[in-house]
Amino acid sequence: MKANVGGVDRVLRIVVGVALLVATGTGMIGPWGWIGIVPLATGLLNFCPLYILLGVNTCTVKK
Image (cartoon, rainbow, N blue to C red; front, top):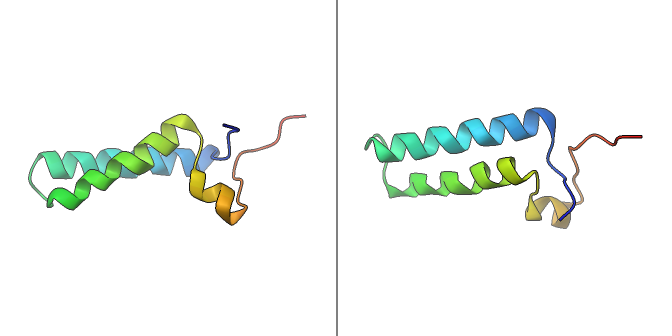
């Protein structure tokens, strides 16, 4: 798996994922909030399979 998620994209994914999971855990939103696992995992792993299909890469290239 080559990293394709970087910088601001990674931070936003982690924040949104944690927020959805916390909101679900506290009962603020329904069980659909467990979808927060997806952005959290992709943010922590720096890899998004959907980005490969779309040809997107937000990770900076190191020279």
